[in-house]
Length: 256
Image (cartoon, rainbow, N blue to C red; front, side, top):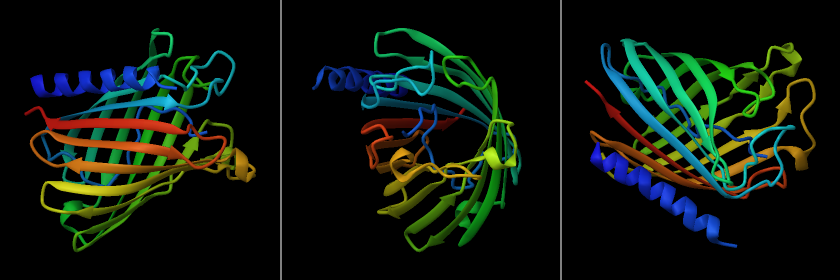
């Protein structure tokens, strides 16, 4: 636990340093799901954080949080129900804005269904359902949902994983927002991997945004797998609508 607190403090310190230096929509979680879940009866905690040292200077909607210099995060509590299902709670969702205000953003419930022992399967799959309660400054919709299919392949040391995500604001099928994520990873050893991840937002299914208004962000990522697993990455915006630089950091460990 001391290691986690120190590392978390290091991220905050790095964020402040970057802030002193000269759209991907904001989120508490920047992650590609690989269909691995906690073992039955195991409680796992994953702590997500991301910081935008160089991003948009206007909120996504009136009264929303300004992305630039904002730190967003959430503890994710996950419990292995069976070898094919994991239940999760994200609480509390929080932000620290560029002017230092601490904001509570809501909470999320999720249910993740996967092929058992996905890490050992050449081909794996699953689907995740999240239901969110949002405070007004975090999302213009009080309630929202994420539908995240998972498809992936382990080919030797190489991983290819696709998450063709649909975001649902309960405004009809055509208004489902297509925001896919993808990961290409190379495992250097049993405990170290590096990866390229891309996070996109094309807009509603009925009519995608113009290319310049879409969000496309590419992350360079490292992973360490141990009793305390760590993932960190640096994101680069590829369109004018995307935050130019985003830093992400995640810690994960079993609590029992």
